[in-house]
Length: 286
Ligand SMILES: Nc1ncnc2c1ncn2[C@@H]1O[C@H](COP(=O)(O)OP(=O)(O)OP(=O)(O)O)[C@@H](O)[C@H]1O
Ligand SMILES: [Mg+2]
Image (cartoon, rainbow, N blue to C red; front, side, top):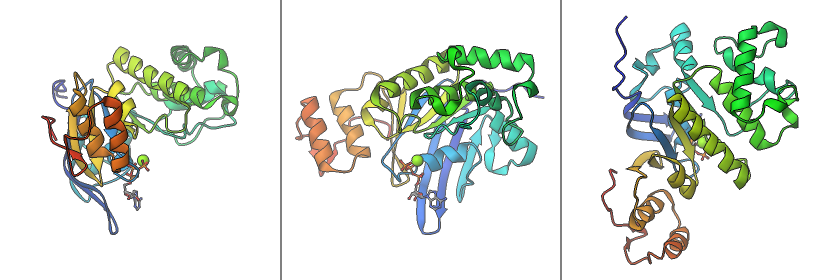
């Protein structure tokens, strides 16, 4: 075996187009993500965020273009090779997707079964080492005291934290999150997003997370990739963004001029710099 090149991008999409019948969900998308980056895919409903994420896990195959993740060409993988890749990529969803009737601990343990479909028959079927590791992850997400509670009795924020603990059981290198806080209240959203960041830093994870809230994306991500009608229209670091650059992000991913006017007012940026509802480019790598 050759030694993996740790400096190579862990995710590389090149010219990816995805059509569903008459709908073009992704259009000639190029994206390269380095190890350890925290990237948000930002865009309105239908802009192609989930479709892009699903390509990274082999849940979709591109109509054209190439998708490489952790050195493998994802569309060419199947069977054991695809399962091996998926075991290195954790996925968190908007609806948590826990098994409601199982305890919190059992749900976390199912994360260690990336090669087995469906839950096992009870705690006894897992090794002691796996149980200890699951309890450790529950402690990490602040839910150790809930280990033996049924998961459907937890709040939404707690359930998403269980889903994070479950994803960690795989020892992933990449964490994909599709609108992980879309069904949570603002306080739980903040907690969950902060937790994902902390864990990513501790574990050296690469994170790609879709969101539709511009403000949350700017405060949380290292880098924002904006999608609009399936096209990548923005790709910028969030470090030291000026007001004009923040306005540009809103301009590129938001649609309504009303929304843009509100943001302009809030930033005190006025709307003078806007041309036809889209701010003049100010140096982002679009
Ligand atoms: N399996 C599918 N069959 C047909 N069309 C699809 C399929 N999956 C996605 N699409 C279409 O592709 C486009 C992009 O969808 P996608 O789910 O990627 O958007 P999104 O940005 O995740 O939206 P949301 O914020 O609502 O989750 C949409 O027009 C959607 O209707
Ligand atoms: Mg989606």
